[in-house]
Image 1: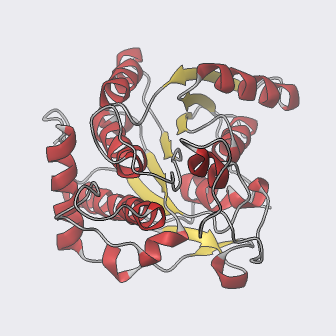
Image 2: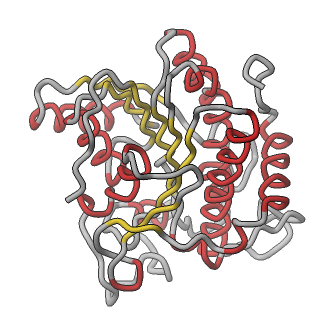
Length: 308
């Protein structure tokens, strides 16, 4: 079991904090002494998760705040609130996501739901919250990708699946490859500008959470079995183990800028955290920069002049 280093005095934000790897990440950060904002879409579910964590760790410093990563106005409101409080942000954990809705759905801003929620929303949050991060002495951004990034493709001519026949699985893979490219490019930007910020990435392997069914349930009474939620024959693990690569990326003194971490056991799906292979599509710095520029154009969010 990965032991989170002492986080006393640290201030963290974790998205998707009411369940799964997000809730486990919050629990272990708070147990190690961090003050954590649980960033959730549904406040009632966030408060329930907060109560469950407090039952285990009565002295945990937890606050629930609303953010909808599928709504750029909500993302901006959340980031503005963190910055206005004036507390340096030591850690941003981009964990929230949606997996494989059966039909093409869109965000409040008209983006395909997975590209919008899994990549463009976290991109906008990361960039808009940078002033708070860069006010901290050694800030980190840890972003959750997925093993599906290995077969993801960035289709710059059709990022939103408007021209092609929508594929739940390939759309998910594209969005998680985009997250890995975000991780790598943010690390490059930080190095180029001399920021102390460390950008890292992780994937959970095959971890049993509600993600496999929550996305597949959208628009249906029951989740449709698909490639991503019907892999019962493969080795899988519980959320305690599955959250560890993300916790390692977020807190380990041995993590490196641009590093990518995942389970080191069978097929890279289970087991203790190890360095994960970065698909060559996320190693192309020119393409990573192009995707970043596309994201700036789509979201209207760019590096603020005060930190650029």
